Length: 251
Image (cartoon, rainbow, N blue to C red):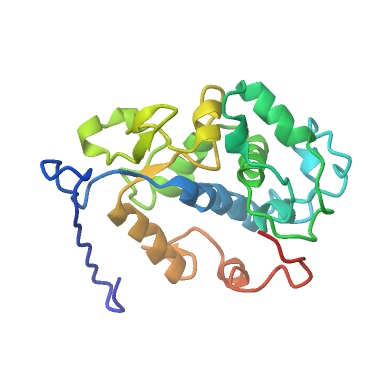
């Protein structure tokens, strides 16, 4: 995106390493993996904060009383957004469990460090945040995202439901020992399992480069695009600040 608003999207490569594989085009659809944590999950939470429907200092148990962690009274929405809950395990290690078992693990696991004291990038934090958004609004995440972000930003090929597109339009992710060729389904293992029960907010969104540019242009314009405001300027500015000055360094 140039300062004058012009765009340039140049695609290259093939769907697979085979020379005969289709060329990637500007409308080729990708599993955008953990970008899902931001688009739409964190963005929807920030919109709720903008509107006063959610606060950074709201307790998680206000929305998810099933949380039985011994720190449950101290877990705040800000900890989900800043990834400062130290789950200290990989959800992918539990991919063979049932969805309810995985959720129970997320709700009940004990942290290695108190909430807010250590940065720990985890799918579990994003899954909790997505559940908070759904319960605050009273609707499924995919429907909220379509109404609040994808449709107004004209992200017409961005979806949690790639099955609506022909598989030959979707770029494969990899050959997985667990599932074989992964194409048109979420690559993330725990999200793949959880999708049997819910719309997963940590991974599972599919999109194209031009759609993502629409979102990025909105962010570069401090929350506004085509006379429609998605986030307040003050909130966008706050995203550029360090919110973890006291955090213990971690992975």
